[in-house]
Length: 225
Image 1 (cartoon, rainbow, N blue to C red):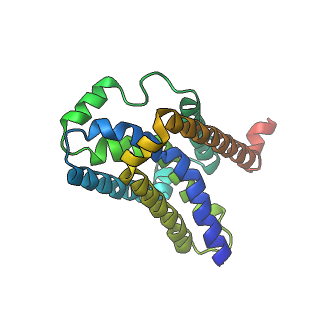
Image 2: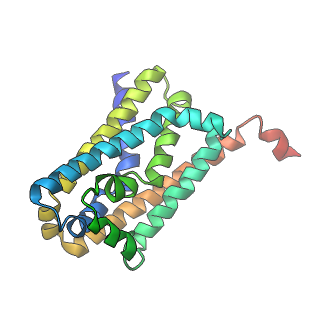
């Protein structure tokens, strides 16, 4: 059981950390916090990571309810989540000019004192891709975590989310030194590597979703006709 808990935490980290991509937040943080003192910047970063963990754990706990309410099947969720994750991976591997924040969004964020919820927590650290992954993990708690009680599966995934938020906080806390050490080219190179990993994760989601769909008894009669 301990091995299953550990593997679930690692799987959550492997799925979430590349898509949360705190290194992207490192690139936009200096511009967003130029008008803030060092103490205010630390508080904003800490609050953003709290928000990130709260958003993702909320969607984790409410994932099954959301799927039931909208009649979303697990294969459908995995295929849709795989498309979203793969798309975000492609945008990281082949970035557009100007990054993920538009000039208008950047200017609005700079003019605000509180940037912790948006754009730091949402959509930088816990955007649509992270939410899609978390809802997929929520479905996995019920269908794929063998030998673990449901509550323990939720606890293991929540632990992975909290560790991801903590790693994001550590990265953003050292953003100035990290940006100076890696430079623009170094951060872009790491972001592209994470983008490739996201494409692999998204494709695997698609494979798992298609496999589940082909083995779904409710789908087979429609397929055979």
